[in-house]
View 1 (cartoon, rainbow, N blue to C red):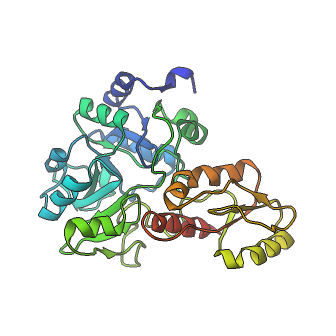
View 2: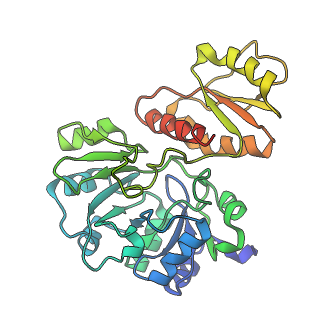
Length: 329
């Protein structure tokens, strides 16, 4: 990928989107692989570049909450409340789709996921573009999400036409997805907005269903598959009390280096353990999680023992990502 293909110039990104090209865009959560959501040919390039199943729906990024009416059949009072309170931000609203929305974007489903990202560069791009940009994470399907422009280049290379470099992602895990297409609000993916924040806006705690059910045709929303966000390393998630015993067992049985990722540095580690830099409290852990998983792969770690953060707030999303990464084996 040439230097010109990694840029901070939104005008170049705007030209590329209008030409039906793929543009990686920065958000506060992760980098997205974007295309004009009204251009079916461009959107199909997303699926090809990622190796993503065609029935796995995409999220459409818009520049303003007022654009919901262009994509949704109706905007419910609950949807408007959440948009007014939490957009721009790491929240995706799943609504009944407008008849004009293509099956290519929605995976043939009757719903559409919408969000206004909280990143100044991409917001400026979206406002200038005036339409919607379909953008899943800018990586190979099922693998670790990208939180820097360099991650996108490493994962997708020439498959992406342009990378808009907005620096490291601040939040570091994907948006929370709230399904408002039915009678009861339901969280389908834990993310950068906590359940308590949603409950505070709606006046009630939403129902949570973050795993696809047998009755579902594929996943109703991104991030619901059992195995996802996975590095090459085998992930073992344990609490702190079981970490040392697990590390000793891993050293005896692993076919390569064994690593540890934890919120804080640990003492009395078994000799030979590769200890990654501590990830910190939940919000810090979220912002570095994917970078640490990528680091483990770069170091050739074959088994990574992970102590998760507290599951309060955004920590619940971190724990969710780690469990799905661990399910890859």
